[in-house]
Image 1: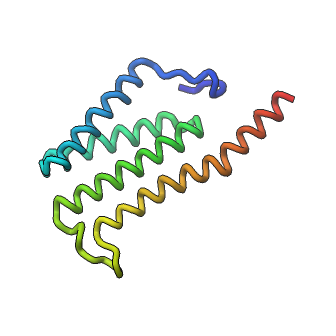
Image 2: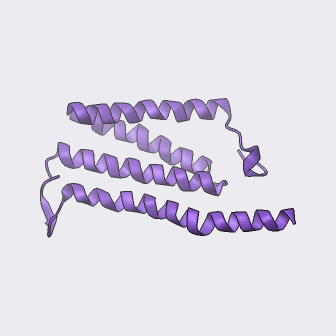
Length: 136
């Protein structure tokens, strides 16, 4: 998947199926969290996060895809950490001032936001500027 430009971007069917299957793992992880099925929830982190990382890596040549897929990786990481904190009972434990164990999930959540902030404030304007310069 190395398109010449974003307008030509297409997703091979096998890759799209893996992305869609990834959603199944993600849903099972979150259903397990909701139902307090600790073992299944923790097990489902591995395929959910692994596929998200693989998708980000496979799309790394397209900056917009990389940024959004990295944000998803950080989102799943934060979500998985939060789930584990509840399952193992340290979600309400104070770690610093009013912050509890589950608040540590803010680190990957904010990291994902920062990745997207960088993309939309720095990378995307550069891409648009370069695209405009090429068309002139």
